[in-house]
Amino acid sequence: MIDEFAKDNLHKRLRRDREALLWKLDGLSEYDARRPLTATGTNLLGLVKHVATVEARYFGEVFDRPSPEPLCRWQDSDGSDQWAAEDETRDQIIGFYRRAWEHSDATINELALDAPGHVPWWSEPYPNTNLFAIMVHVLGETIRHAGHADILREGVDGRTGVRAENEQPIDEEARAAYCAKIEQAAICFPEPGSPSLSKQPATQQTFSAPPREGRRTGCTGCSGCV
Image (cartoon, rainbow, N blue to C red; front, side, top):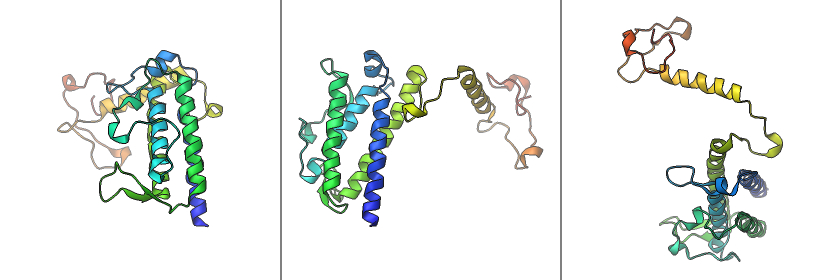
C-alpha cells in the first residue's frame, strides 16, 4: 500500500510541476520565450525542451521502453536540447513535451516502483536503478527547472506564481517598497572586519559606529552606520 501511495503522490507532483513550467510561456512573445536571459544562455522555451528530453530519456530507454520521439544518442548530446532553433516552433516543443508526458505516464502506470532500470550515462556504481529512484530524479529536475523559469519570467515582465488561478495582480509600489527594505538591510549588514552587532538581545544591541565617511554607499542612516 505504501508503494502505491508513494507512486501516486510523486506522480501528482510531477504532473503539477509540468503544468507550472509550461505556464511560464503564457503570453510571451516569440522573442522573449526564446532569448537568452542569463549569462549562460538559459531561456524559457529551452527549459521546456530540455525537461521534455529528460522525461523522454528517463522514462523511455532507461526501462527499455524507447520514446517514440526522435532523440539523438545520449552519447551525442550537444546541448541543443536547451534552446529552440530557428526552425522549431513553440507549438512543436510544447507538443513534444506533452507527448513525452504521455509516454512517461504509461511507464509510471505500468511498472511497479521497484521495477529495474538502467541509466547508461550514470557512472558506476549508480547505473542500475528502479522506477522509484527515477521518479524522484525526474521530479527533482522538473522542480529545479520550473524554479529557474519562475525567476526568468519574473525578470521579463514581473509575472510570478505556480498557476494562473493563483496569480496576483502586480503591485509595483508594494514590490518596490519590499525590495527597498531588503536592500537597506543588506547595505547595513557589516562586512567582515567592520563593526558588528553585539550578542545582546535585539532590543539592547549596541554598535560601534564607523566614521561617518566610512558609511557604505546607499545607506540612509541605519543604527550601525550613524
